[in-house]
Amino acid sequence: MRSPTLAVAFLLVEQLFAQPGTLDPTFGNNGWQLDTFPSFVAPKVLAMQPDQKIVAACYNSVSYANLVARYLPDGGLDSTWGGIGYVITEVPGYFGDPVFNALAIQADGKVVAAGYIYEGAGNQDQIIVRFLPNGSLDPTFSGDGIFLLDHTQNYVEAVAAIISQPDGKLLVAAQEVNDLNKKDALIYRLNDDASFDTPFGAGTYYIFPASVLSNDQYYPTAMTLLPDGSFLITGAYLGPEPRRVFIVKFLADGQKDLSFGTSGRILFQPLLDFLPNATVAIANAIAVDTYGRVLIAGSSGNTNLTNIFLARCTPNGAIDSTFNNTGIVWHEPGQNTSSVEGFAVIPTGDGRIMVMGSYMQSPDSARFILLRYGPDGQLDPGFGDEGVAALGLESLSPGICATIDAQGRYIVGGYTGADSVFPSALARVNSGVNIGIAPSEPTPPEPVNYDPVNDLLYLAAPTHGMGTWEMLDMNGRVVSLGRNDGRPVRLSALLDGIYMVVERNGSNTITHRFVKY
Image (tube, rainbow, N blue to C red; front, side):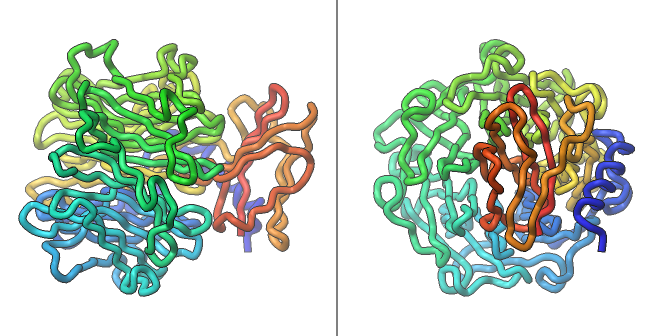
């Protein structure tokens, strides 16, 4: 059996010889995995398991068909998931299949998918489904594996984001239409059995805006969890001043963190300086980097979405002017582009940031697009073509979702095809992200020492007094942080897998990767 240390060393060698921004030929067929699922569904959201299997919630926007597929690390469908590599969930009394907008992988290997399902007459309810590791429904969750919520009664609702906390509870952010046909955000938390975790927010839920008479409207799209249990939500702000996106921070008890931004909230127009007449703006993704800075990515434009933007804020909720001088960067693929959308943001411990989306030049021509930026907000010239990688097979190849694997490679999903046949498409893209070496390090750092028997991690000894450290999972999420006082770090709350540790001591920053098993 290859040791974890040797495995990491081999991965470093492989990445050093892989051109960043190019397809990884060891995945699927020359970097692409194409599958024709029932009803021509395609990936809408991706999640990476600790064993590096890829879970994809797939859908068809015309038929509303939906399924959850699981792939092996090499791109092939995993036959241990539902017997054929995918599962279809049917709910008696509802119209069509659930449409899943979000995925979460739990510590015990269970998979959670959340979104909405049609009730009929234009109404839709929230739905959360939990699967056992083999793809069957989990009867310990809501009695049959399916949790349904009709909070507004006969209106439109949908789960936008879901996170599995370290204690196994599920944090949920949902979109809903209130009694006056205005959009608001509903936040709640579920226990392991799908009962409501109370008290939370105002009792069971936190709803913003708090009054249905408010002119404010919020359309949440994404959420991220911080190490102290607080969390951030982003999306589109729809009134009374349009063209804006929002970030709201909550404490672990579901109350707004009033120390963040202005009374717990940031509102801004990402491209106001460049597009004064912009009428459309939405943030679709949010993440936190190793310094605690908040990253959001999305789209903005005049009538149509014509630009992908990336914004960075400080941990206390201010626009970060050290990022491209304005806190915001934007990308417009070209004059012939009719529609552009940014769907995912993935930071890595070395400070670089990948934004993934799609651009459409005509109804029959689209591409996956990956943009990579350095810590200063400038495009990374070592990635793709001067920081931009455009991927596609057929004339129509829009990208919709992305994640990152334990080797630092980007996994992107969408569909590709022609003549009304749209196979599901996954691709794996070489990132060039260093394994264990930050870009500024001329020599490899002293390795961390993992003790699997006692589940302890021993960090490198600080050289200039007490240092600090952050630990990230392979989705770029900070899962733990602390001060390096010479004592080992206990890892019992973490899933098995590969993690990145960033140590800071004086002016030095050292990045390690280690395997927890």
